[in-house]
Image 1 (cartoon, one colour):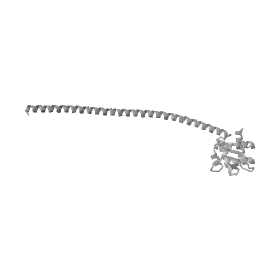
Image 2 (image 1 turned 30 degrees about the horizontal axis):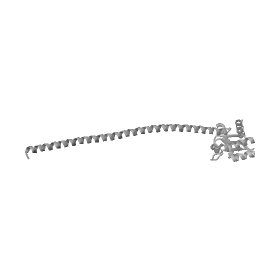
Image 3 (image 1 turned 90 degrees about the vertical axis):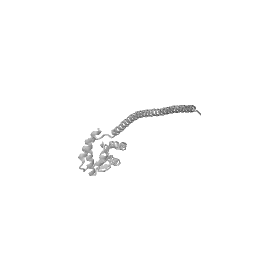
Image 4 (image 1 turned 30 degrees about the vertical axis):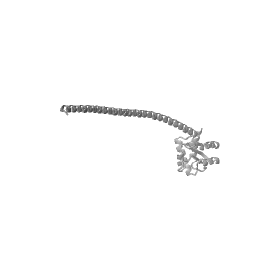
Length: 215
């Protein structure tokens, strides 16, 4: 084989290798480009999804805030209605507890009830009060406005009026209980008569004050 032929074959091989290398380089560049595009598309899609999720969360948060505000307003309205209803009920109950002694008269009554207890001129409880009225030994009757239900006492004013005995309500059953010398609440008490009692003048004075309320 001649030298010139060897040179030509070598040059041909180099040319072929060069073309193959160039083709591989182009393919590599194309592959890298496609990979970059794919990565970019994926990242872009995920970023878009993240932003969309964030927007959805923000919208849901706004909706929840609006709903919470609406429910809070409704709850406040319901509570206001309940409070008004409760106040109306209390007002109705208070209107049934008539006549109601003021603070000064209440103190005078409590003081006399305490003394009557010491002088054995006191009966405690609705049943005992009823007995004193039926027996004609009641000087005046004390009932409490915070009795629940107040209806358990409402027969006593009717009986008092029938027996012509003064009656009055005081605010607290606990306070009446203390005045009666017991630790439990007392809803009604009767100061009873005793001809030789040292309390006769005080009882008469309280009866006159109570009768003024009943006019």
